[in-house]
Image (cartoon, rainbow, N blue to C red):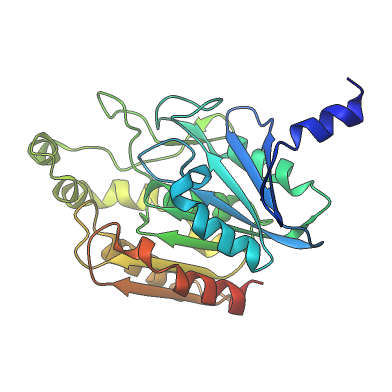
Length: 277
């Protein structure tokens, strides 16, 4: 096949009358790009959480993806572990490799590469904030039930960071002896709260949200059974205030469990339309 024919072939499927989906060749990351027909589309990047896989490419999230497309955005679904082409485990994920995948998608002529926003939930919120804090070409972050620090990777002994940058592990809050009984009881929130008693490690592992080059929206849950997301989001908003963060930022507290904020994309759309698009 000729090169042009191959390119057209890789533009795999039409998902609706006005939406096209394309698989991208991005080393270490599973990438699927959804495009509308207009020019100059702002790019939304979507990360799932500790469930792994490429969550935003699933049928479950199709209605929300379609809403983004209908509003004039392009959408990039990224799987950073637990899916084809990505590491098997959430362990020492290279955020620079994930950022490279975003830049590869932004090369599409339909996309406005100066308008890139990231949305992530749970551990996906963590990597969204991290990438935003390291790379100024990210112009907006929406972090849903995120952490304010890096935590361990999901290995058997929990002894490595979940994230790396330029080949080096990012500092993380380790599992201390007091947290072990909570983990054995599958009480994740209790474990995280106990780990955060190590304030020295917490300070070293802080995500430098003040370096993000655009508006930030935090969504947390009042009855979060996985992590103290409201407390951690409050700590990030306090950090932004301390550093006199020049961009708009909000913390929306949702009554309910860890997954409840995922039902409030109306607030996300409103935030993006007002402060990003």
